[in-house]
Length: 311
Image (cartoon, rainbow, N blue to C red; front, side):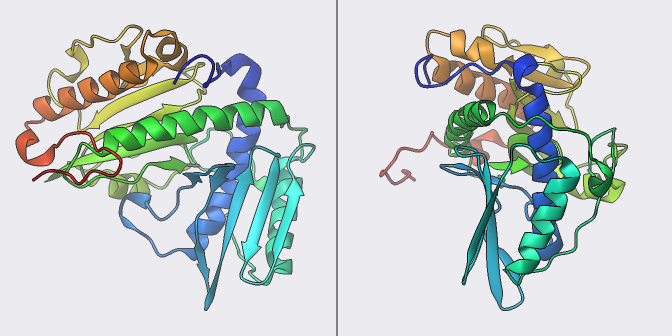
């Protein structure tokens, strides 16, 4: 991760396109949600970073299957079944037009899907079919966002390798529009209070049914108008907010209830990869130590390509 290989992400300049992509990914994500059996902690619904953008992975449909990919390199949505491939361009579409084109394309491919027709986890929940306002979808910004996701995904996957306990995949949640990986202590957590905008409390309570230390990357949004790596714990253990982080630019954001490391601060570090990994490890340690996790039994060294973990 260097200035030459990983670009800046200017939230102010990118926000309109990112918001459009957020709404578009919600529509596609809901197709996966509608077709895929529920997996603990909503692991059945996210998207995944791909070499070209964001993909659903394989979605079952009857005796067959299909997949969908946001090709952010070409600003195209691509849909595939065993028999056929279809695609359409993203720029110039309203949310209503994208929703209509997407559902009609699925029907034309022989995989009709019915989705819930309104956004989740967003305070402005205009039904997709009624959202006819013009939307920005700048191809250059989409490509830049994808390059950032490739780096964030690589670092989070490397971080994941140093944990032996239950851990989520690194996946992209279309509800909150962030890349995330979660570690579990193995113990039950108190019921989550819920209250997230346009998200059933039952979903939040199932997602946080067990103690977690969760980290990820968010390109920014209301309440945090910059791209950041983040880290939080549920339930938040004593002393978590007072942890000392030896990472330039990292801070605890009281409004978010999370530690954040701005993308810009990570890029500015002498060793950006080390800065991000230091942030992820230090904030996890604050959660695990404060929560009295069995760290000796849950942790291991960082994985190396082609080398079996020593036991």
